[in-house]
Image (cartoon, rainbow, N blue to C red; front, side, top):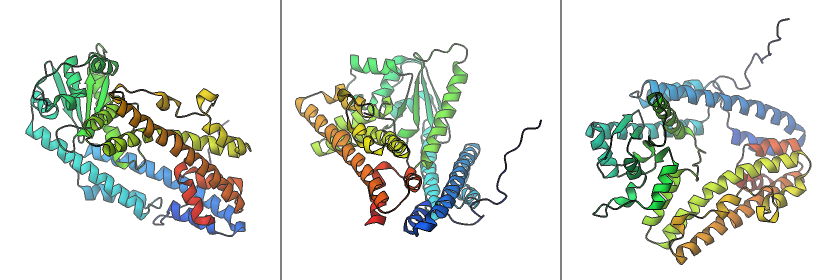
Length: 397
């Protein structure tokens, strides 16, 4: 018996050339009479899903086109994006985001071309980027927006990881035991800053001492290079792209900026931004649990559950690890330890608690305003938890 094929609507939910703006659509639903909301909500969900699939597909095609034609013109890439975007209601903000992403690509592409042209020899390029001549064999591959460095000597890999600490001292210094242990644990690292402008985010260094793949190393490295460059290009398009605070590259960069900061205010901002990376990830998980508990009819319990620490028996303490984590570079003095604790408590405890409470309050306010459960879930699902209070406040006050 032949398997039955899925049936698709003959007409797409968004007509070719129609503009769909999710934020405006949400405001329209929230202000609509109660008897019209369900139908408007159903149409909204269908259009939103259709547009999100279209945007993802457009982005993949555009990235492939950029990799295929790295010297292509910005206008041609933008025309391709808007031509595809007309099929799923691309709005003006989304067009601006595309142009901004392409601008970032162009800046980094020109920077990579420029430095490679200035330093065609791998050893000279290594020296320009990191301030030291390589001791062993290195291989550097450049792509449209990336530089991939294979370090066959561990000391060269160390020089890449800790180049910021070594430059400007006027003399060579030995690596510390802590630095050697950190570098030994990583097989590759993304570099977030160099002495050359607009290049930092483009660099990945590989420790071939750590990654031992006899017979397939060259193929594996090429795959890593293509994979990392794909991430770099994609990051230009991802407005909500978040850094992984646990990655060695991020921690190296944060540590470097912190140690270079001259005032307590600068150090406090650097630490605050660092700990907020952890909190943003926790907010995403907290939002999922909050909506799941609300959907299951257990909403009255979730606020307390999300705010109970693991030490007190909590099962949703998403910030337990960063709250306990100790970073050696943040234990250099009593003043630094005190500053770290103050910033950590403010960002990971006080600010997080406020976001959780505002989130549950937002749902209660929507219920009091007469919104049904499925309406509330649908309308808050695509909004960041930290923005729930503001979104709901605009339509209930």
